Amino acid sequence: MSRLSHLTTIAATGLTAVALTASMSACSSSSDDAADQGSDQQVSAAADTDAGSDSTDETEAAAEPTVPDGYTLTEVPGAELSIAVPSDWTTLTSDTVANTEFVSALATTLGRTEDETIAMLDSLALYTMDTSGTSDYAENLNVEIAEGFSSMPSENDMVALLENQNNEDAGMVFQPGTYTETTTASGQDAVVETYTLPIDGGPTTEGTYVVVYANGGDDLALIAISTDDAERTQELADVILGSI
Image (cartoon, rainbow, N blue to C red; front, top):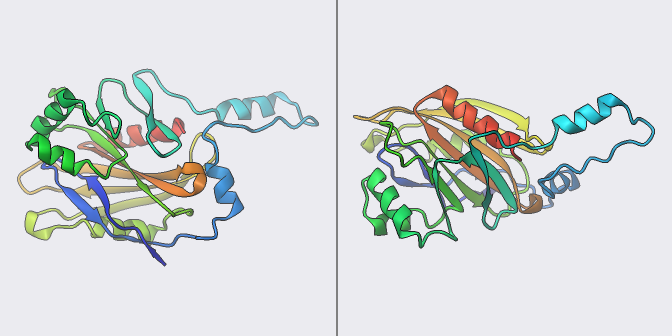
């Protein structure tokens, strides 16, 4: 049993960085199946020369990752992974942390200083957020890479991940929702865990973790999505899975 430690997620409105220490069963031997699933984001299914039917072509077309209008395929640095994010959101990666305009806008949205914001984001591979100010809730998602984990987390792992973020004194208690084993558009294994996070004196987060392979199947990418509407969160999760 390995420990998934020192992960950071930005969970909701107030917004504080919380260390995650959920136990996850990782197959250090890394099965061929896992490596194959995470080895390339692009679909590479070759057509069967003996069964070159229209149905085969349709299946391959349906499996091709897509990016809907209003979204931009965005590279997650150091992950060999790209995901679709809303085009009108502002995105920070390790390559753009020097963007003082973005850091300033994000700090204002979060109610933090710029130095606090930079420190909070240090462990994230990617952070993107609606900084338009047109809603009382600033929708956001972030990506963190769990190195050395080559198998998908179980339901118990995901529940433990959420429980380890609880801060009862601050009125933050994560309520696990539904655990789903699924696949990305290109057929890679993925896991989705929904949750609800009521905040004392603030709006309730309807969040979701989407877990996919990174770095050729050697690591996992934990994608945390936060909005105040479960249907909107599901929409974002579906778009991300459909873009991989």
